[in-house]
Length: 113
Image 1: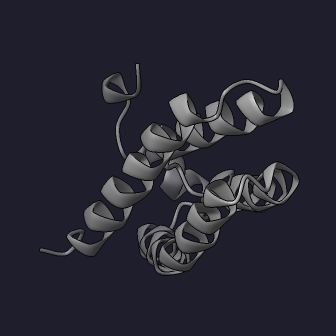
Image 2: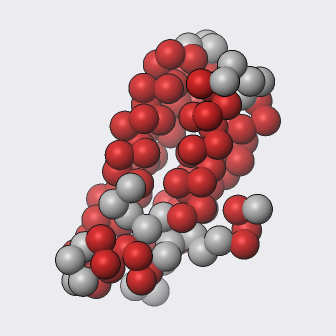
């Protein structure tokens, strides 16, 4: 499902940045730099089964993702967040989320390369 979507929907990202590619790129870079820290927080929360705190972190992340054009990461985050809201087994949703965060961060690092 996620692999069918682009890592970054550039058309959407640029549109969300007021039709300015440089602003879109800067926003994505800021998001990627913050995501490393957020992922560590979420990993620890998952380790200690702190579901309410995980929901709060994912909710904050979804706010930023709404202005990014990061299609796959947003989809993985929504799926993980929804699993928490529905009291599902989150182990099936954390790994795809974690993988998409890592892919996004690496992709953004290579934007200008």
